[in-house]
Length: 290
Image (tube, rainbow, N blue to C red):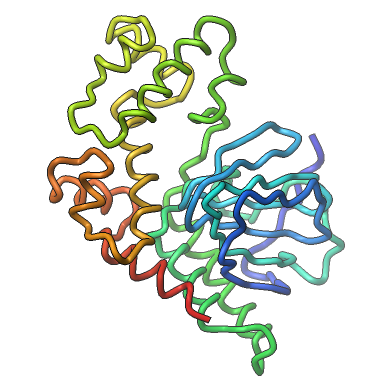
């Protein structure tokens, strides 16, 4: 492993070159590439896949990635488009760019990637600055510098929840043989019946050819989460996509995602994002305006 570079956050002089919210690509591929500077990428809508030398990870809304200089990586954007907010920067302009890991003195270890959540203070600030401070405006880079330091403070002050390398899309690679086959059968059933409020854990266990207790163990081993969380995560991902259609009512979206109780859906969505479904929709749709 390359030597770690320790930086004093109280003495940073960052340089921010770009800070934008991109409306997303559909079915596109970015890379493989290696950047000359650092980049924070926050997924704000849609899904896809990210790959580097450490393996592949699922791209989901609310996940934050730190791309380091000179490290090769590839983004595979989803079929519906993958919106993302990004910051191109160097932590400290006075230093030559380190090729190894960065650590800020006194800060907690940074899991990369981590699930930030679109309702977190860091994510809200990242999106607000992208909307408010445009390239080429007077003093835009100076304003970006101050906002970037505030972003780092928000980031390290909040919960640092890692995104594991194992996710729904990585089941076949993560598990071998029978376990992979069983997991795939369960996921195919889940995808077919995502909008069915009668779908139960027993149905997925039956598709996998396991008892419920063994299926729960399989989920923990392959996906790193229980079956109920797996179902809810898939349904909330679908809800994020449907909320971008202003013609659909929140109640319609809840039912399309398998939630018979709209209040339960709203409460669950709020816990996951820190925003109500309507607040999430307003935030995403306002981000589309030029």
